[in-house]
Image (cartoon, rainbow, N blue to C red; front, side):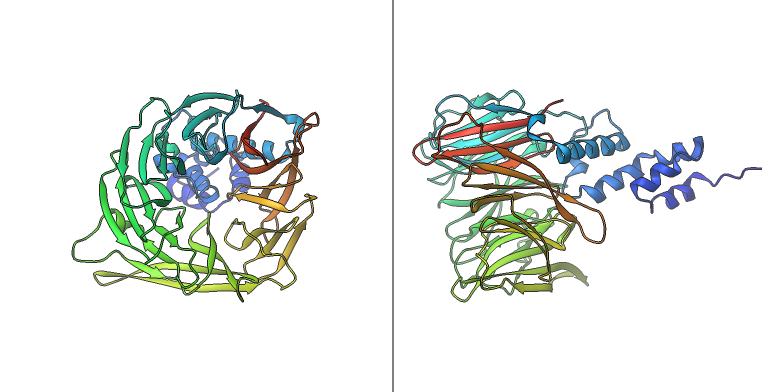
Length: 466
């Protein structure tokens, strides 16, 4: 006689399984198949693999978590195997001026409703903000001409909102549907960094200025929630951790130590206590990346010996409750310097928290956080001028008019980078004065800016053929 375990203990056992094992046990019998399809099991698998996504705030759709996981994995697989002929290529029409910052308004493809339409926002030297349908290669919205040049851009895809800061310090919120901004706020100083986040307390925008101040504003009203002075000089970088619990702030001045703020204290300030923050013991920081799957881990790139040498240091942050107070701690877990003969990198990206990808001349390199080189890619003929990375993709561009796509693989002891696809400019393009200057992507599209050495830019949009 067959004895079945009750559902609760069986669910507990299944919660320890990986995806492959869970799919295997679902084939044992009908009862196990039903238990193995439980939404909570697959939601946890999604959170484990795509922890950088704010799933708890996603719009509700028709898919189960299992369907979402399998669809998302299939999309990533298609991108990993794609070749140039698998993409539709669209080029934006018209004189767009010099294109600056860009960001996806549709997120990174991780949507519960399964929509595969990609929308991108770009900023132009013509003092305008544009929104584009990537699959069709068409402009779907443009802002009125602004009084001052737009310098910064960030988006909040979950609410389909874009945020801009201009040269005069005016902050604006756009939904990229109506002509006028939803809200505007004039700041006392120019702004160097914007970061938007969606938390359990609601949506917020962080704004840093030249005086070293960080403002927390409500969205979309832009009402002030808190203000804290981080440095005596400008805050040049703001970066949220994947879970939004930490906010990294840094200035480019050599004598400034970067700081990490406990986000809750900025969102819910107290009149009796200053916001909790921690200075990281590392000067001359020039880049920082949070580990997507370890939200308390941050890796910093720094310079030494009058900026002749480059190194990387990794910290694990903790917030420990001590009675009625919270104590922040930073534990340095790894650090190393690059060899003196190696060209100093400018860009970096991280995957699981143990890997660092960066460029050096024409090479893309993969190191462990302890300084062990794992891979070296030689796909570019010229110096790599730009690197963009998330927890799934790495994109590199160079002056040889090319864009190369890599993806993080999770096989064996370490995740590693897989070289996937090389996209070059069209062969009939006889303009040698053009080069690919920037690129970003989601799971179904890649968008790059082709800059002309003299004059305006070209927006090129690639989307996977369905």
